[in-house]
Length: 87
Image (cartoon, rainbow, N blue to C red; front, side, top):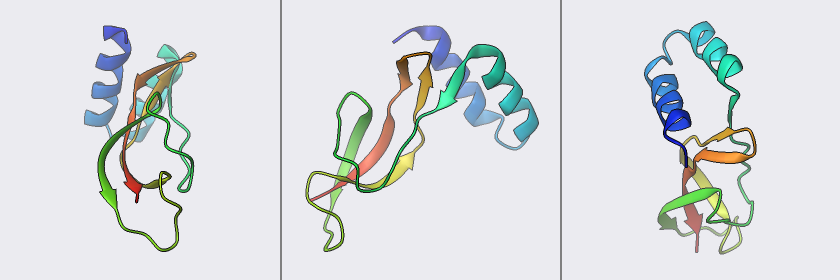
């Protein structure tokens, strides 16, 4: 993972209170919020599992909840999404 995208994602998180600046920063740098869907099969290349949750609604081994948004830089993962996985 390159350091530049990491700094950009950290700056984006800090600038959340001014969404127009955050959007402009992402447009200039090519950083985009990672696409995430509840129920997706857990992929360790895209997600950082921080815990497991019991679920009757979501199949075991699938993403149950996003805790922290992930970001992409071109075709690379700049920061994986931090998620909880159904068990």
